[in-house]
Image (cartoon, rainbow, N blue to C red; front, side, top):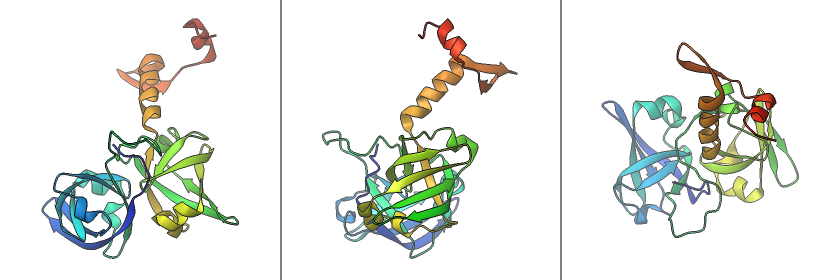
Length: 221
């Protein structure tokens, strides 16, 4: 489990194909000395397992699913990535609960530069937008952010100066693609509601048919 609060930004130093997996080596002197094989680290929001480490860098391996669902397969040597080690259970939970399981990709469509902050707009597939609500949480390239707008075809977030300076979010430009993880609790709630109130066709749930009338029928006033 993670919090979406980035510890440091690393730099991809090498990319190696090893059969069906791809190995990434990442320069990260701020955290590498404390890492050991088997530790979990989010790399641009994708939960990864450390396969080797030394005083200045560490390596991870990516399966085909990771390459297909995230932006990690498009990284090159020199690319910068947000990094966060797994949270400790004896620490305060800042940010929000993040699994490091990327749901899909969104694209930057517009950036409003304000005096000290930025408002960034993203387009995304409908299945991602369904899990994003105003004032809710969304993880973008591993960064926990609060949603401002959540519309049928886009969503937006506000970014404070510290996040702009200390993560890769500050370098985003129109057309860039980012890893998205929607709110974990929201996904569980949606699955429960779909199973409880969804319409079924051919044994599969095709649409959530929950209405105010049905809520009243089930005792919700």
